[in-house]
Length: 261
Picture (spheres, rainbow, N blue to C red):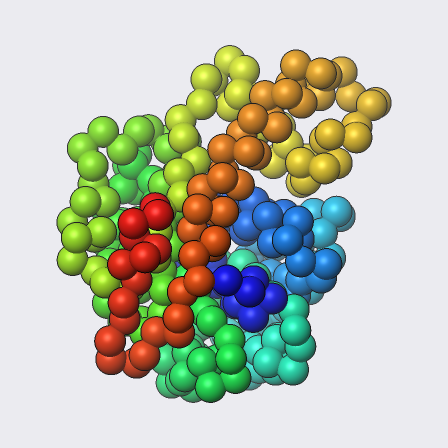
């Protein structure tokens, strides 16, 4: 797959599910494969991705003077993507979830992208703690409402493991699920502390790797974080290495991707 022709939207109606974590990881992965990337943060309340100094993020103010989402603000980065050879990643917020869903549907964005030789993916984080049912419902709604768009599920086990295989019904019934990426449950005394510290400081893996002024990012911590990076990157390679054809509006076939997920 030619990643420079892909657009990636990270979406979840439930706040705190891990959208910004997914966006930060995916942005770094894409930048390792492409020289340039259109990075957009539309979250009207908390521009977490925009706080990464190591990433060149456009912070789009989507709220108008009445504190309502102005959907025309989405035109800016959509047009930039269509006119370029760069991949695009958009970190959305729960506050503009309904607005960007409506924008994608009413403006027939998947069709526009397909006709322009582009592919679109929606990345949906789900977790298995108290908000499990809500995040799974959002996943179901996105996959059903956007059946002509590939959906990538991110299993975020920060709040608990997926012990009851909660994703099985989705993988069986929803044909536009392209694959699953897991952020596994980590040792709270070591890996989780390192990973959380990196995220809290809005640092990329590369920045941590070259950091010499913080004893909390010593050789052992860097080694653990590099192992986490390799685990996630391998899953993304497994997903995006497949040469997936554009989905038609009525008939999506992603068997090749499912076999690799």
